[in-house]
Length: 157
Image (cartoon, rainbow, N blue to C red; front, top):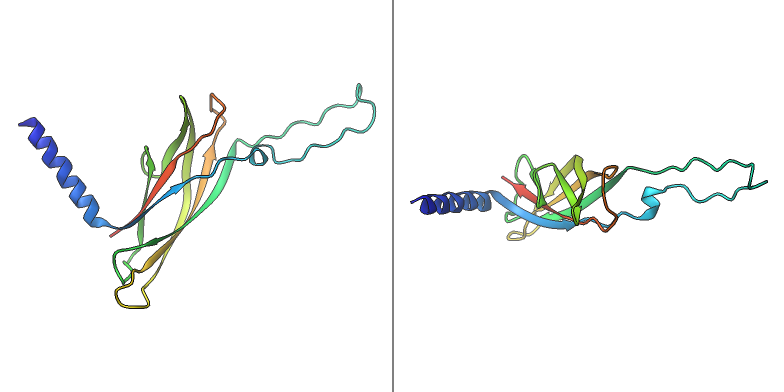
């Protein structure tokens, strides 16, 4: 009985979720480059190397990224208002983690704008353009490596 109830609940939630989604896109985040972590170029030290102090190193512990995606929706008309949800795969809404091995990097969505362009020709889909500002925080990572993740962007009714 419990298995049937669980299956029924999951099926109902999946059906509700799929009917409210007008369009989706999965976005893979680009790798963080060394230039984003160490923004200054290396400076040559002039003078006596034994007495000239080294410059204080400068490292970023946060990187901001702009994400831009166009999502065709299953309607010729634009929804009013345009509502977008974000889900990190795996993760939760509005914040997530990029993972390598057992180490995690926090990612937050700071802001977003979603605009819809209705279809010009009947039968063509309207297109929602989403521009989001992301912040990647990495002062607490425990291992080097490639931190990767995907973001599911969904236009909902």
